[in-house]
Amino acid sequence: MELPRSLTDEGILRYGFHGLSYEYIASTLPQHLGDRADGRVIVAHLGSGASMCAMKDRRSVATSMGLTALDGLVMGRRCGSLDPGVVLYLLEEKGLTSEQITSLLYSKSGLLGVSGISNDMAVLEADSSAQAQEAIELFCYRAARELTALATDMAGIDAIVFTAGIGKNSALVRRLICQRLAWLGVDLDVTANERGIAHIQSTASDVSVIVIPTDEEAVIAAKTRMLTCSV
Ligand code: AMP
Image (cartoon, rainbow, N blue to C red; front, top):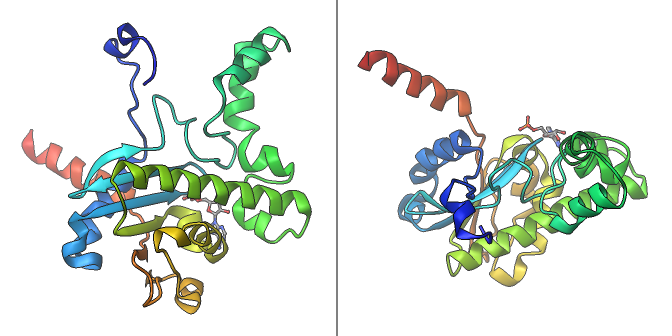
C-alpha cells in the first residue's frame, strides 16, 4: 500500500478476498484451458461481493480487494474504490460518525446506492429505468477498468474467467465488460455468451473467455477433511 512503511510493516497490506473461490477456479483451469491454464488468467468473481484476481501459473499475483472487502469493484451494497478524501469530507465537513460512514460504504452504496432501487443485479436488469441502467453500466465500466489494470500487472492476458452469481448468470454484464476490452483482443461469441457455458469467446478472439461456476464449499470441505485426517 502507498502508506508509510511503518504502517505496512505492522500489517496494513493488500490481502485480497474470495480466496476459496479463486483456489477452486485455479484447480479447474487445466481442464478448461490446457497449457494456457498456467498463463496469464484474470478471474472475475462477480457476486454480491465482487473482486478480481490476476493469476500466473495459477497463483495470485494481484487482486482488486485490499485490507478490507471495500476496495476495488462496485458491489451490491459496497462502493469499491473511492477517493480517500471523501471519507475525510464526510467526517469533517458533513459531521458523520465513523459508524455512519461504515454503514454508508458497506451497506448503502454500490448498485443499491447508485440505482436507489436494488443491490440485486437480476432486479436491475429487469428494470428499464435510467437509474437501474446507469448502475449496471457503472458496474461494468469499473470491472473493465480493473481488469485492464490487472492485465497491465501481467503485461497482457491469455484468459478471463467469469464466476459467482453475476459472472455465471448475467450474459448482459459479460457482454458489456468484454465490449470495453475489445482493444485487448477480447471478442465474445454472442450465442455462446447467451448460453453461458464454458468457453464463450469467438474464434477471432485472442483471449479465451470462460464461464466457470465457483464452488467455495468444495474447497472448505476438502480443507476440513485434510485437517480432520491430520489430527
Ligand atoms: P452471489 O453473491 O455469488 O450469490 O451472487 C448474487 C448476485 O448474482 C446478485 O446480484 C444476483 O442478482 C446475481 N444474479 C443471480 N442470477 C442472476 C441472473 N440470472 N442475472 C443477473 N444477475 C444474477
